[in-house]
Image 1 (tube, rainbow, N blue to C red):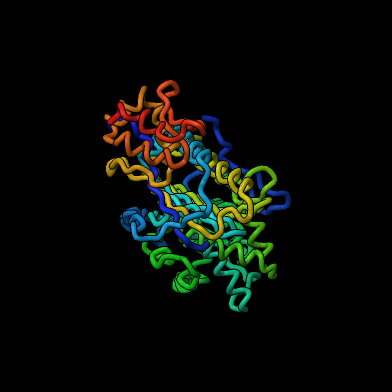
Image 2 (cartoon, one colour):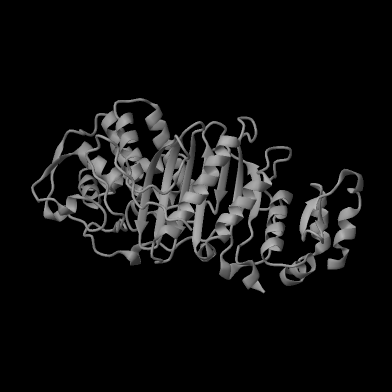
Length: 431
């Protein structure tokens, strides 16, 4: 009965690589900001210059391609603790609609290079997330002497765009410097300001710049025809922004200030942290891309396709709860715990659902105990309903010292003196 396991199971591989309460829907601007916070609405970013609806131009989403079974697993390196997966499932199971929509997440520890990637190469319409790397492009031009941030542009009717922003409510004929327009783009996600800057610094130049950033997918370097993004590319863009800020060049502080003043607090970095972010929101596409500066600096992006669902506190809750989990995880991991490994996680779509047991025994333990706790009265019932072998479960979980307890209806640690053979005897009835 598939209804009993709407929480889709994670299928994960570890391989060597680099690197409900209502949430407030707006953030207060920092003192001294020239830009004011606005009520959050869809940014409504259009793919074409006229501002006409362009839903039909959004490229078809690419299907997730699972990592090959031939990718070598890392032995003897860092494993995610079972508590991490327990909390991950608690978050996803608390949001019934979570399992029916696409979601991707990427996390990268900037000290060790350790990465966690959830559906990492699933592509989405980028919405206003594209404004962050585009503004980075303009700042790079300024550093090279190819852009004058004090140059003034006059706001006219041809630049007016609907969606987010403040310029749409201002008088035509108002002048703005390039630096002011950058601020509006990053702090209030202003679509009119973005249109002005794209005319001054055309998309062809940006696309060449984006394609030069290591790790950005070719399709995610495009600015025309419905720009896309995936979590792998968002990490690459975020790292480029992080590096720019770290250079302490004449424009580093400008970029840092604008992006920490971004109006919608979606990803949360924990108490005392500063979050450099750029969100995107168009119809069902709801994203946030962030750099968290705290005791540990890390990159985190969450991309979703909520399929025209009305955005409210539940959707903000996805970003809040998942980013809090990763914030707490980042604080607890020692420097040498995880090297430069990458963990890739896949949550299959409901309509594609097939029962695949996680290969990692700690992940398997978390999944099985969650299912026994929430949906099944016994291991026999679980195995019959999910068409899995109790003996196979016993073999996998015995490796980490766990066996099924009928009394507890969960897999529990095996006492040292009875560890040998316990798992098989406890689970034999389920075969």
